[in-house]
Length: 299
Length: 129
Image (cartoon, rainbow over all chains, first blue to last red; front, side, top):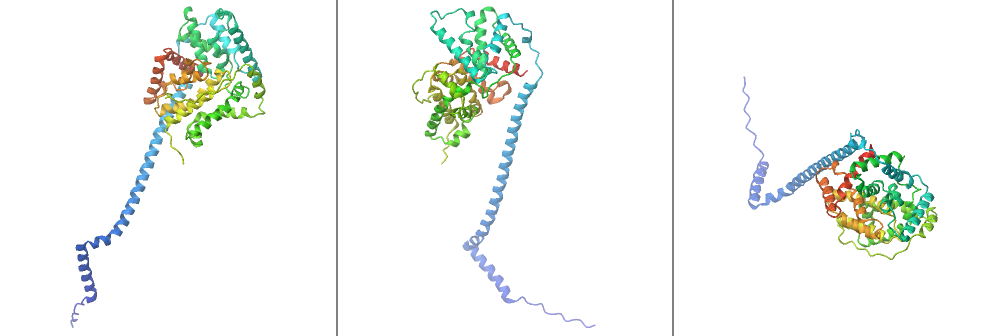
């Protein structure tokens, strides 16, 4: 058997090897001179940029996650608050010692007075104004009376209870509580000065009162706000002159965008029926001069 | 360009705007209107509570009462302003402290305020029941 002649190993082509060697030498040279790094730099920069973008995206995702988490926590807290309030609203009636308080005749009279006699509840605008004018007449007569210290029983619960006469419909709780508190003070000598008594009185008033009407077209409030609207506009002009933009007013100052201002706008229209009634009310009002703007020490 | 105004400053301007409006109201201002305006301020007062911006309710009450030519008693206005704050029993932490602090401060001038606030919260509960 004839052995195959071993072929001589194929030599690598010179130019290639030479190229490699040359390239290596050149690289070493460049490395020594620092040029290789410079050449690698754009690639590194590109990689860095990619890394940077990834890191930024990661950060963005993390921030979004954080915000979402914070929102979830905030929402949970808000829900908790709402639930607490709801629990209170719908919760079972707490057994309270106040339920057993029997009101005396005078207290019942007072409760009846607030609930029915002088309340603006259910009145039309005209009726409310009529009631208001009647009261102004009474106040005027009382102011002109030679002896203002009239007997308590003769004054229908006197000046300290005027809240009960007019305001309970407009700002039920603060006014009525205030009136009740004052009344409690008045009756302190009669041994009725207790929180329980006032609460019992409140319950009695609520029994007599069918519903509250806070805010409607028939309210006296429309007449009152007509004159307020131009002043409010002038106040807003002043606000704007202080560098506050309209955006800030609409987003940061809720009271200038609330129901009251809406009502003012509607009532300010000249064809609004409240204008005619205002003329009647004007007889009892006096104009006073402008007052300067002074915001020192409010907060 | 939108100017960045701190909340405290906005609050000051907003409150003063209303005081200015009340001051310039022609003739006798109806107490109901004052209470209604204060009611409108509820959102602002609650935000001040959230942002922990201290309001001197007695001073503000006095200012509003003064603006109304004392048609409404300053104690009543102060009380009405405090009524816009939520019941601290349903709040926690910072906000609860804020309300208690506000009431305590008002009590220094009007000691009966605390009892009146308790009364108010009781009424709120009664009204719901």
